[in-house]
Image 1 (spheres, rainbow, N blue to C red):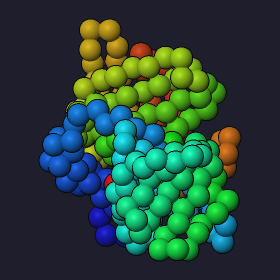
Image 2: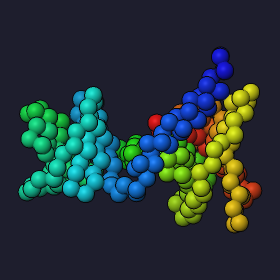
Image 3: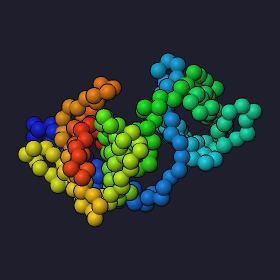
Image 4: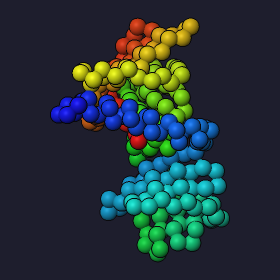
Length: 219
């Protein structure tokens, strides 16, 4: 694999799936929650995961768990040292007396963080029609959503076949109703709508129909 960036990327991804699988099975229960990526003044960015009466904040350099407390405005979580006020798409954060204001949710980034925190290992997107793919080894599923969210297909996870020379990983599933295949090719890939760059080109084939897009490993 030396000197082959595409092959290295695919190999690292497959190894990551094997590593994640053992621990993800332990959290296989469906974790309900909402995920936000807040971008504040002075380029301060943090992730908030709301699960019932608890807020998990993924701050630069550390993670904190905050309980819900009463508030006259918005939803408030605090442990006495860190306080987080949420009003959905907007929030304010106070860390040991220092305030982070004008925090707004970046919805596009929040979708990817939400998938990651839900145990998804690899995610891909494509256009015309809009679709997304989520590969979850620990959750033992391959989920494909297309037609701008109108059509959803879920298949059991299968181990990929690796072509070392071509640097390709292939997932193939055959059920009584559908034929489903995923091809991951390591290398530069640019989303045709947003122009965002990814590290893997993706082709999905569902019952003979082909979908093209880009994706990345989340773990």
